[in-house]
Length: 313
Image (cartoon, rainbow, N blue to C red; front, side, top):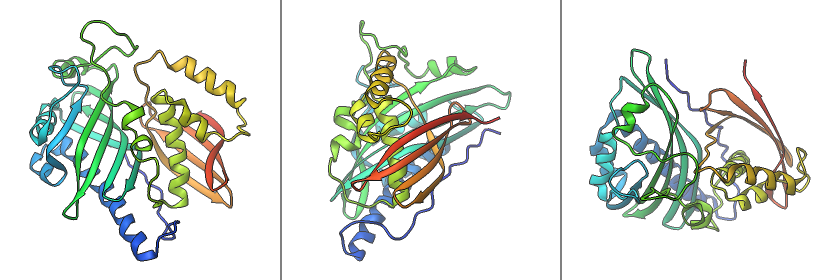
């Protein structure tokens, strides 16, 4: 009933870049392994099989969860701290999720990855709780294995029948940004933790479709994190919806009062025709809100040319 289908664009084999094919394939394998391992981590939220964490996080991992009540910085370190977070997730009859807005940048044996994970916990009586977990991980490759060395998780909740049950276990701040008393600051600071900040120059491992997709993801993170430099970088100078300067000024003024916003999209379709592309994206929370985005490639970089929103009937 609450299952969410995770849709991915098809990956082509002709990955761009200047590396020789065998080296490029090896680096691409690292990218795919990290993505698969991250999914395995989110799977533990549903299965509660925390023994699998030995193959996912370092024993001394630095972990921060905004939902932890006892620490204003969310600190709950080591693999035992991560295990406790998973086991403390309130039990419900069903738990489904969709991994959205996935970005991973790799440089050598270091990687920085972020994703918005849209979750629905539900009981058979029809009560449910929806939340989005923004997860930012630092990865390190040791002994030919990728492990998480630092984990930061901010959770955004939504009003729902089971909110009170989750609030008994988790801490939630007010959605508007305020400073008073022992406020729990967000665990993720984009100026420091985002993949673009941690690894400004990354290996060129993505297909053209994935580069188009990441352009839209970066745009959304720019809005969600109040990092409007990302919005500026992803909008074409000939942006059709509005004057580029006015669009950035207006959206920044409208959103900067909020503690956080989230736009968890899955990719439905990406079509490329030379230096032009069209993408169809759909939100998971709220459900079925669609975006059709037009892209243009200039100076070997994809940018957003127009955005049209709609609602499925």
